[in-house]
Length: 158
Image (cartoon, rainbow, N blue to C red; front, side, top):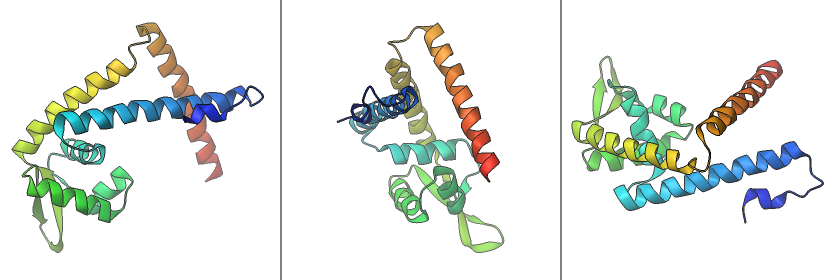
C-alpha cells in the first residue's frame, strides 16, 4: 500500500499532497533501484557514493563521504570495500595523517559512473514524461517555494 492510500478526504489537502509527494518519490526510487540492479548489477547506495566521488576528483575522506551521504561510517566502509575490490575506487593516504585516507574513483569507476549517470538521468526524465514542459517547470517552481518555506522554518527554530 502506498503512503497516499492512508489519506482520507477529510484530511487537509496539504497532508494529502505530502503523502502524494512521498508516494511519487518512493515509486520513482523503486524504479531507479530496480533498473540499477538489472542494468548495472549495483545498488542505489553504491551509485550515490560514486556520485559523491565524481564531484570530488581528488577524493573524499570517509567521514566526508559519510556526512554527504547522511549514513554511518560503517555503511560507507562496507560500500567502499566492495568498490575497491571491484577496482572502481581506490584509497589514497592523506599526507600528515597516517590513520586517514581519501577515497577516489579510478578511471574504470569514473567510466562506469558516467554510463550509470546517463542512464539514471534518462530514467528520471522518463518518470516525469506524463507532464509537459510547462507542468514540470510549474511543479519545480512550486516545490521550490515549499523548500524555501521549510528551510526558513528550520532556521527560525534553530
